[in-house]
Length: 127
Image 1 (cartoon, rainbow, N blue to C red):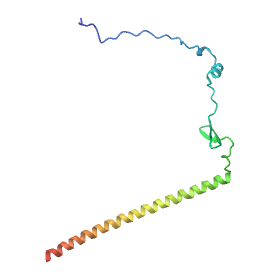
Image 2: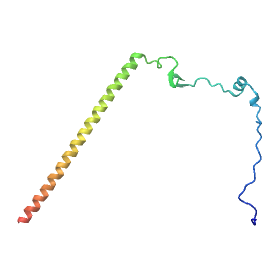
Image 3: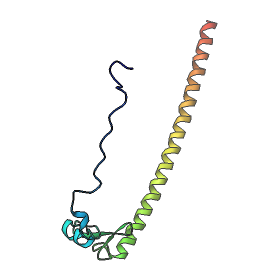
Image 4: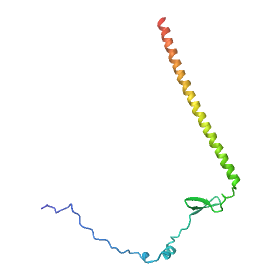
């Protein structure tokens, strides 16, 4: 028999009440939506005068046309964006090539300096 009793067995907790204290469960769904404002509808927002709504996982303009920008302007902007992306890729390629050329000439320069140092040391030994 333990001296201080069985301290490792906790007391049982009393069971919880199963019934909710809130009367919201007794209300039907339409009343709950009216009372609590649970009918949100589609999310909408207004950015710089352009009204957008969220439908089927995408933000779309409510007017159908992107706030005054017509289709021709949108196509022109897409083409310009594509041209700029291609130009950016070309410039990245040129930078990579220039870096390769720089590293190659640096390596050659180091080799030439090493050979020059060896030749200097050989000429000093002869003297």
